[in-house]
Image (cartoon, rainbow, N blue to C red; front, side):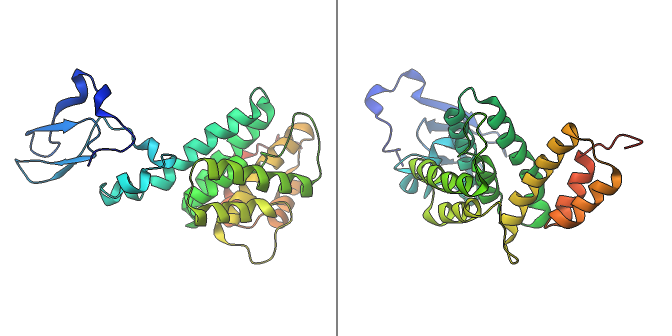
Length: 242
């Protein structure tokens, strides 16, 4: 299938090329917008090695195009989205490196917790990257205002990237009350919550060093997952004698 988002009238000499089958080494001819081709040697469907599937997270023709892809790439479509969300977050904050750094660190922690807890990585990482999107510079808004702005701006960003409606709503549900969780939150929420708590405890420990007893108290009272507690223990350094 030819991607409707590309126009062959503007193709150059490298628009058609040969690549070897990774299984048997047979030469396979590809058009640059061809997602897969069947190897005449072994019969395997081979993915176009020069195609960038990152466009699938925002292209208006993605559903039509992605239908031709093998299951392993279809399963990764949501994962492509979180990279686009990260870029949008950085574009939003521009030179506000403090907030960019916070979002990036929280996403890094969340990315470690999601597989440990069996949460959805795409939902967890998108929410982590957007959790402080409502913050501005050195202002110190209330948690309620942060949540409200995060939902508003998060929706704008996800809709601009043509994110699936179900994924969008699940991300926004996390952002809506991240700072005042309920008793029965799902695993996605718990991972983002604990990732944020690790970041906050790291910051607190840098400003006012914690004792081991204080850290353990926070771990028992402030975290929702055992994976979060273990990652916090590894990530927060307590100086001897504190």
